[in-house]
Amino acid sequence: MFDRLQGAENRFNEIAMRLTEPGVAGDPQQYAALMKEYRSLEPIVEKYREYAAAKKAMEEALEMLEEGGLEPDFKEMVEEEFHANKNKLPDLEQELKILLLPKDPNDDKNIIIEIRGGAGGEEAALFANSLYRMYSMYAEGRGWKAEVLNANQTELGGYKEISFLLEGEGAYSRLKYEMGVHRVQRVPETEASGRIHTSTVTVAVLPEAEEVELEIDPKDLKIDTYRSSGAGGQHINKTSSAIRITHLPTGTVVECQDERSQYKNKDKAMKILRSRLLEEKQRAQDEQIASERRSQVGTGDRSERIRTYNYPQGRVTDHRIGLTLYRLEEVLNGDLDEIIDALITYDQTEKLKASSEE
Image (cartoon, rainbow, N blue to C red; front, side):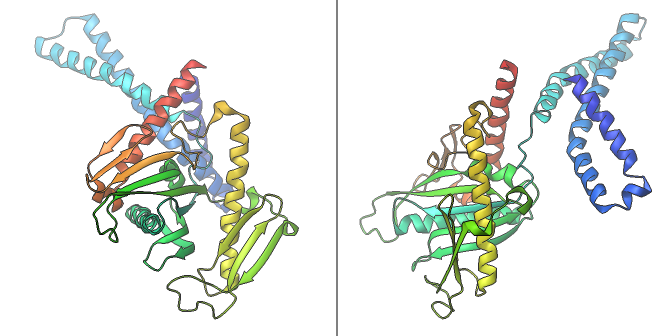
């Protein structure tokens, strides 16, 4: 491990020098690539230097204690220095092991989130709207940009389905754990007897695919136009601006009717299609190499029930890690970090276990 850390520091120093060279500074593409690598190495190198400094301070204190002849007050101070740094080292070493774990290549990507109402009809559609609001507020709190790509709204303000793009640093790394079935337990406003209903909503989290990552042959696409339909649109049924794209080799169908412009709808539909196809390609690769699952907490299975939102008890339970919080309102207002941080910690712990067994 320490050979890798020393290699990372050497590379970090090399990049720092290269970034000051006129030839590199004058080449935007090369400069951007080096800066990206520099930033990826920076947290590792900083933690390694912190570890090295603590180890050196511990060793120097030990040497002074072994030599003897220290005044009582000074000896006590040196002993405190020794023990403080000695106690730091295991935690710092654990943090370094986590930083050295193989990084998910999608972690820095923007994401497309697709939310679909499942069992529960209109109540599921209304909760789909609640989840869209939750993710939008979380994104806003992190300074990310959100853009709706496609939405199929119901008369009561819910969503049969909604797809939206989130652009921001670490979007996929934070929200990839949201993929799966979200269950809601509450009394619907339309329920006269006050009975609690259980409904489900499915969430898919797709890393945004760049054109260079996935070539799509135009001959493989069937593109249909139709008039927009659904609740709430002022231009509904006036123009054939809605787009339906079918990827013939896979049968994947994407629709977009959110914009007035046919061109804009086609552009948004292609974003969704490209990301879905990339995710399917990656999923197939993951299945071929079962030991290299993208995550130990179920990010790859849309049919897995991952979380329950219980309104009568004000409770949110994440079933993958057994975490229960009685902060339902805050969570639905976008305060997701406690859940996400717990999922990341669990994921890292499982990966560390797996790497130590290899």
